[in-house]
Structures are given as structure tokens and as C-alpha cells.
Length: 466
View 1 (cartoon, rainbow, N blue to C red):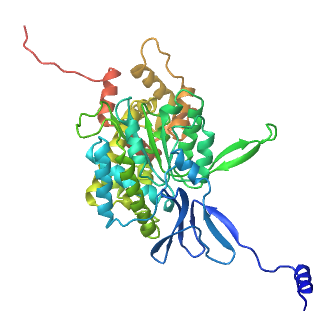
View 2 (cartoon, rainbow, N blue to C red; view 1 turned 180 degrees about the vertical axis):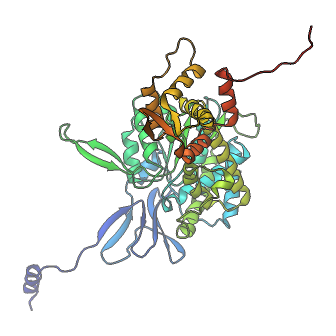
């Protein structure tokens, strides 16, 4: 067949061979279970792919698992690295055992940051958790709290630099790029709450923190291209978070997600540099490479965390939920005990905070009245009356029975029912009340103190007869 006729025939016949599709990835699991991660070659200043397949790691410019797909590195990685917004590993590096890696992380933190030994152990294991966090459904947040000059920013910089794909949000003027980066990059959000403290953006940061510790709960936002047509879009915000802040959040549920160390004074350690030296970035880069290999080796074995002994450790369900993944990556018994001790102290602080609320006052009144009540329950109006006499001063207006009933039903989630025409808290809720007493730290001592406030305590004095 002449050449021109052959070309004409090829043009008439459709090309049945499919072309490969380029798939940009930051982190992905391939069709055969291989792990794929975008890394950044600092020598050539371009992104590459690290592949973990058949228990072996390799670095490639692109990866083709089949005839239809070609995985390529995330194209925007270079710009993010140049502006120090996101930091990637350079390639997997041998680290020895997990205990050796934790010791190396602790030495790195100790070199540049002054924290307690227990929190140093907790932070080192939290770094491990960030590199395998997508194997779990719930996560805790790590927080350093204190006034300026107490090392919050130093902690965020040093620890954040070795977390999984850290996103440093300090340079963001609004939260919009944070939503897009979390949705596109994933990884660990490193944020100083003070950067958004005096703006309306702080409410959006709270939304990220509220929804970001449980997998499968995106934040919905409206987006527009022309300023008129707004379309809802879901942003994935799940992932570990490092937070620095001066105070605390008013929402107790949000506060319960944090593992926190509070610092009141600047460090007095002479071996901690005042300014971070250039070697800190080099030390962090080496640890990120070792942690990448840790992710590859341990990703498959992690998943459902072991259930903690809540009774033995006094762990509440919420604390158990966020603590179990961290305990799953901690292999040293010393580290596990340090994590449990820190969690117990944090939980006790939450109990003390609850004990100063009006809910705790109401529960103390209920506990006292239940002990002396001979009937089927305690009347709401008696709770309101006793609370007003004991806890309110002369200028305060006591709560009406209707308002007290609202507190009992909506804040304490106790059921009320009518008995002889009045609403009561029934004695049949004994089990629920006992759990509430424990949650709000309402004890017999509080009941005795309440009796004293109500003038019901009898004092007997003995002395000489004159």
C-alpha cells in the first residue's frame, strides 16, 4: 500500500488506544495498595514522588501503575515550599527502631524548646501520630498556652516543622487560603491563634477546630466566581493541629479536644538558643525524611486503636476518644504513662472548671435534697428556692422555677415529670445523677458546705460555766 494511502486509512480509522491520564497527587494510595507521597528535591528545586510498594521505597519523577494512569507530583508544591507555607520531606531515610526515632525527636525538641519532660514525651509521640493520622477517625490537638515571650511561637515552629506536611498559617491574612490548603494538602495545621485574635476570622478558625478532629465532617462554605451566584462547597478540614494561644476557648467541648501545656514565664535554660540557628531547619529536614519512612512502614499496621481501661485511669469518654490514637503509636511504657498522667491532669482541670458553673451548683442542691427527700423525687421549685438562698447574694434575683426547669432539662439533660401537679426530678434517675456528680465533681463535702450556707448545720460549743 502506498504511503499516502496508508496515512489516509490511519486517519479514517479511530485510534482505539487510550491515552494515559496524569493524576496530580499530594498523598494517595495506589490501585495495588502502594503509598504515594509528594516530596521535594531541594537540590533540583522540584517535587517528586516517593513510592512504598512491596516493602520497598523508591523516588520517581512520576509513577505509572497501569496503562491508563500516571501519577505526577502536586504542581504547586514548589511555590508553597519557597514561601515556607508547607514543608515536605525530601525522601525516605532509615531511622532504626521506633524508640530510636522517638528519642531523636525528643532530643530535637529539647535542643530548641523548653517544655516539661512529660509534655516533651507527649509531643514526640504526637509528631508520630501526625504522620499516620489518616489511619484514625478521631484526633486530639496539641497546644502551647501562655503570654507572649513564653515560647509559644518557638514551640509551633520547632515541633510543627517535623509534623506531617505542616501548613504554617501565620502568614495568612484571612482563613480562605487555610480552607483551600487543608482541603488540597491535608497534613498538619500549625496556627498561632493570636494571628486571628482581633478579627472576625477567629470564628472561622473555631469552625475548623470544631470539625477538624473527626473524619468525615467537612465545613461548608459558599463560593462565587462572579459575585452573584453562590455555590456551596465542602472543605475537608480533618487532621492534626498545633495551636498556640494566650487564653482558652469558651466552648468546653472544643477545650476538651486539646492536650495543653501552659507556660507562665520565659525559659531560664541557658542551653536553649534565644534565636533559632540555621541548623534547626537542617535537623528538621532529616527528621522529616525519617518520619516519611516511619509512615511507610507503619501505615498498614495501624487503624483501630486499642480500648483504654477507662475505670483504672479515670478517663472520660471524650478523653478516651482523642487519647486512644496517640496511645496506639506510643510504644515505650514511660511515654504511655506520661501521656496518661497529662490527660488525667487535663481532665481534672476540666472537672474543676465545671465545678464552678451554675450546673454544678444546681447538682449540689439536687444531691442534698435527694438525701432528705422521702417521696418520689425533688420538686423543681424547691431546687430553685434552695439555689437562690445559698448561692445568690441580696441583690441577685433568684431563678424562677421555670428557668430552673430549663437548666435541669437542657443543660443537665435530666428528665422531669409531673407529680401531684408539680414538676419533679425523679429518684429513678439515680444512675444518671451519679454520673453527673462525678462529671461536675459534686461531692458530699459540697453538700455539707451547702447545708452550712443554708443555715442548717448545728454547731455545739462546750465551755466553762461562769
